[in-house]
Length: 112
Length: 115
Image (cartoon, rainbow over all chains, first blue to last red; front, side):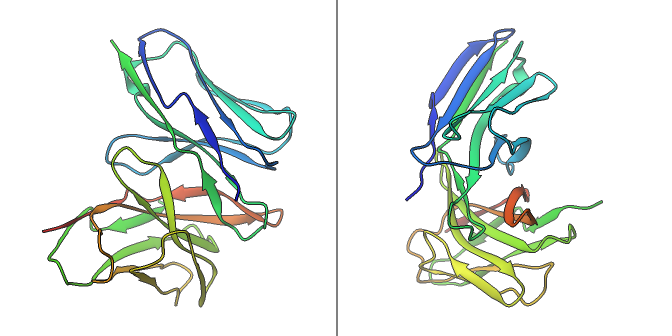
């Protein structure tokens, strides 16, 4: 079945550094969603992408929909301690049953 | 405020007991979902519902049951048949967009512990 592979699995960075993570699949997705989950909370939608090549920003976050439709990237500029959390990519499965497929997440830790 | 509400936040259950987790949304969303998350893991789909009075099994439905009698509500029952129920449970909802259900919004989660 369809799978989303996120990398890296975890990152430990210094405050102020830029962060880059990606999500890849062997199959095509028509939508890419990026979520952030803080400890003990539900995931919060950060950015939604609907067109190949689309580049969308949300504050210090920028996400891109890969032109092959098989990948997406999330960048965080000038990281701060509150960026800590797990970042998930997600997309609807191809059979149009309404199911969302999630990647395994990238855990980000920021050292002040 | 519009949103999706899960209750309770924390739940303790004795082995052999059934327990029901509540999920309510006032976003007028058609689709609702239940996910399970274990420590350090991603989200695994338990059940989902595209429309009232209809629902489908997800990837790990064994030991769980759901109902969708109202658009706003999608309760999840963890039965005694679920052998390892201790986990963080997340409910989500979404509305159709160009024929696809996307942009799911999540509740705050319920942490279930079996004692």
